[in-house]
Amino acid sequence: MLQPRNYPELIGKTLVLEAEPFVIMTEDDNPWVEGLFLTVSLGFVIGVAHLLGGLLMTATLPPAAAVQEAILQGWRQFSQNFGASVDPVATTNSLRWFWSLVTTVSGYGGGWFRLFTLVTTPFLLVIQWLITGLLIFVTARSLGGRGTLNQTLGATALMVAPHALALLTIIPFVSVSNLLMLTWSLLIVYRAAEVTHGLAWQRAIWVALAPIGLLIVIALLFGLLVSTGIFTGVAT
Amino acid sequence: MSANLTNTTDRQPNGWLPPFQQVIDVLQFRLDAVVGAMRDQPEAVATAAIDAPETTSDPELPGANVDNPPVLSEVMVRSVAPVTSMRQGMGLVVVTALIAGVLPFLFNWAIAARVGTALPLVQLAGTIDQPADATASPPWQAWEETLKSIAGLEPRLPGWLAAGLSALGVWINQPLTWLTYWLVYGLGILLVCKLLGATTTLQRFYAVTSYAYLPLLLTMLGPIPYLGPLAALVAIVWTFVLYVRIVQLLTGLNTGRAVLSVLLPGALGLLVALLAAGAFIISLVRMTM
Image (cartoon, rainbow over all chains, first blue to last red; front, side, top):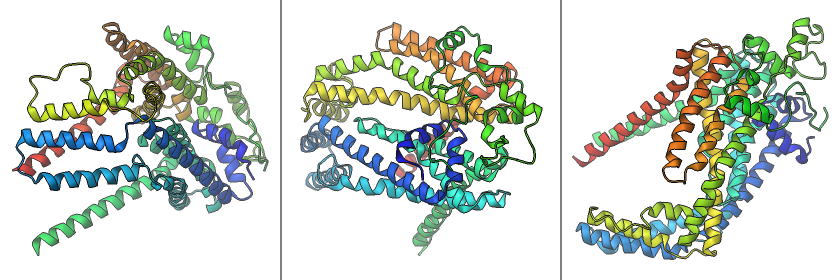
């Protein structure tokens, strides 16, 4: 069993696409358990970083109620100048409701809602890992890969490594680009497929692209279903 | 299997930064010193040199082939170590970005501390020190006033601390942004290079292209009036020329193709952005008609 104290080194080597972490995960006694533990641990620590970063950010900003008042004041001025024919009371209430929703969900307005991040972050990482791992296994096997499902899950768990950058969100106003994390995870999955299944780089690219391809297909199908539903609704 | 990480990549340069002399060499366009003797090797050989655990004959590692002991060519490849590793490249990009951000960080902190609030609020207000634009339409003036009044609100923390923490966050975003360019845009360039017949590998490409970010150190002069924009322009041109030269040496492509591979991902990105913006504007116009 890999010791958690080795995780920083493991993550560092994974980020620079060295083969060693993939070999270690593949050759572990129980790769998927190792992967699950790594994913949940990292997810929890990131969740704590989000929580603390959120608290610090709230502290660096003016109180939410004061900002709300300034926005409402601005809206009143705007509607006077603009001569808008909307009901001012209804709009003010809508703005209040929207602001309350935003501040509650983001945690800016206080409350316990922000604690959810301690649960949602590891949970979402685990879901992402399991779906990707399964897809990688099926695609790699169909392209001649030799690795087992257990080994594949172990190696693909390393795709959470770029999320370690999110630990920096403990500092207010730090944000990690989703594009960066997606691309880095993609490169790690590519290396996982290459090492675990002994695939040539050309095939490993197709394997790594499989989850994104599926995502695009699902999005297209969803879009098609929604647009069909809308058109059917309009027609009837 | 041992639970501890062992060093199986000892043929790669260790540490998270390249030697200082290599940095100086690159800035003077002496690129042979960092691209190394491997630039003309075909993909399979280069991969073997970099990804030894996959091709090794060590029976302890997966991918090992006990029946086929290492042949002479493999031993020779192992002796030709890459000059820069990807980890050094990553370290270089991060450290360069951090150094480039020191002066803007101090400048930003001072600006935000003077107003006594978080930096993004100051940036959002924008016109905080300027009189409201007399030519702006009344509705726009109303929002300008609103932003100013939000920026003028007292934060919960002392103003100087809120300013410092937010400026620190903006500073830390700089290496993250540069890493995004290095990794995402670099991948786009590598794909174009591959389509044009290049033979380099992923890790080698990232390792050496990291040097192209060195001239961006000049962007640290950004806050200085007149000199800042000029330094930024020089940095961008220098980076572009260096990147093209590195791509050329790494991939063996001619100058025209190297320039094309560096510009094409950006051009495609711009095209997609323009199409998306056009579609959005057309949708808005249709909605209002």
